[in-house]
Amino acid sequence: MESSLVHGLVGGVLIGLSATWLMATLGRVAGISGIIGTLLTERPRGDSAWRLAFALGLVSGPLLVVLLGGELGNVAGRAGAVVGEPAGGVALMLVAGLLVGVGTGIGSGCTSGHGVCGLARLSMRSLTATLVFLLTAILTVMVVRHPWGGGA
Image 1 (cartoon, rainbow, N blue to C red):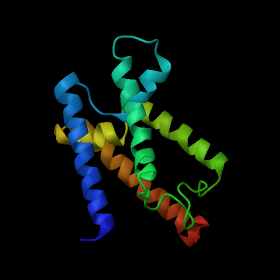
Image 2: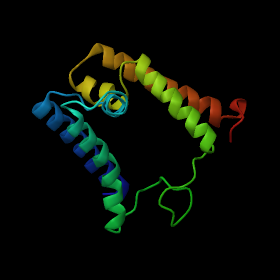
Image 3: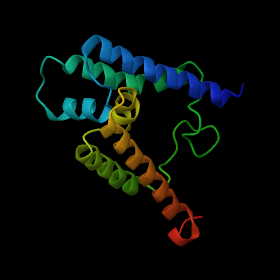
């Protein structure tokens, strides 16, 4: 089996297990934007510890892989690099991040909350949100990457 296929399969299983564990133990949805957003915007309260542990786990997992001699896949633009420069530059990345933040607020969640957890619960709202996410991504790629969008 191809290495990238195995990595994707293992990663998907771990995401599913972590979302299931969070729901089973704390009754919480593993929506990253909500977890991080609440951690950053609300005063510390009783559920800050698990939110902080979740956020640290998101960062420490890839760091652990690198420390153990593994590679992070295709996140770098050149051989030997761990994390490359943003493809469109830092300013574009900041604007994109801001738009994603606004979108998660408008959509009451993100791809992890709607796409992983909401679809698993057969939520029609999450199905609609996930379809909008995917269609927007497809449209964005078409505009940016095709000749009529100015891309290559």
